Image (cartoon, rainbow, N blue to C red; front, side, top):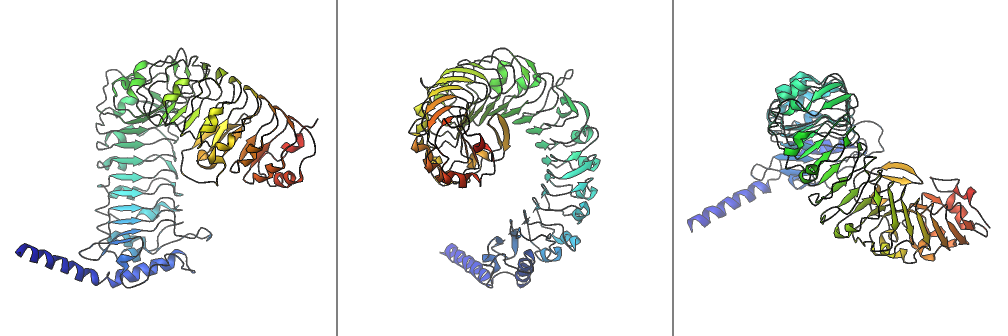
Length: 576
């Protein structure tokens, strides 16, 4: 009973504290911040009213003290306002117990009274990503003793990294990617021995690779230095003693040549991800044979030659990127350990596909485009029922698609165009792939009629949605296009340059979500359906080089005037 009484008193105390609401000075500071976000309109956070700011959106308070400990203002600045937002740092300094300040995507150009941020002695995380900060001196607000995470990625920082960033020696995360930083990486970063995550990618750093600095980062777990302008030659042995290293990315540094081997070096780390794309590698690093926990490996766009070692396919369990090399010989027949996410193999001279795509039940994306694979469509893909994307464009595959063609229920994109030589009719199994967003069968030898069941692909008959997918490449009329998130919203149907015939089925005009439609260079006849005018989401349309007859419907004339892509295709329309 005594325990229950004490417990009730404790709860009542909390309720009494909570009933007081937040601190008045903190509430006033929040209201001033609100007014400044979209000044002079001040229309951010319309639900910030009432006495208790602890109940306001994007604000969290400590239950016992009612002081604000978390402020989360994400993309609240009106994008139509041309001027940058310069929040007054003295307003944030009112929050004595603030632990996290998250302000991404608000067009912030810097802070006024920036040294006031130095009063935030409890601040642990400062997130300023996706803003417009240019001046590195804006980052000199003094030492923040509790700060462990600073994110300044995707701003407009220029020039050298300010040395004042090194004042916070206890920081474990520093993100400066996607800026315009130049010069050498300052040596003082090597003194931040607590760093576990360092991302300096997508900048313009020059000079020699910072080998000595990296050697001092003894706590580092993720090191991302890709897409800079380092030059010279380095050995991977410089990372040998970083025992906590799990993720290393030094890819696409054009003037850097990576030497994979060094006499008698043995890595102390066990990598999960390694990205060495575009590093002028001449051979596959042999130390990878001892890396048994690799999930992602990128060796694309190097100068690799010879066969792919079989151990590579056993060691990599999720993502393997080896496109754009000079690998040759037969592809290893055992891929059963490549179990999820992605298999990328697009080196130009691999000559055999075979029947090795087995037991890949968790595979989500298969990209083996731009090779010289021969044989028929890999029917063993029928085991991969979770596949989202299959891209085997520009190979030397042949045979009929109709026999044993797998119906993959989750597939979003099927890209078989380019230099392949598939023949026979379009397989009706495609109609069972209801989520299909992009279908490219162009440049083959397909014949027969368009299946009338295409409108079963409900993703193309419904209103457009915008989920998130990774950046991918696709081919339209033999032109490569790189479009971020393309498979999230682009509905592509390209059956051009085949030997398809007959009339256009009315069901095709039910695909109202199509953005790209190309049926050119076939043997189609008859009149163009007036109901093509229903495809109001089209951005590209090509019906040329067929045997249509009759007049072009006036409804289509109105449609083509609004197309941003291929505006001249109707001028090439052929009639009998």
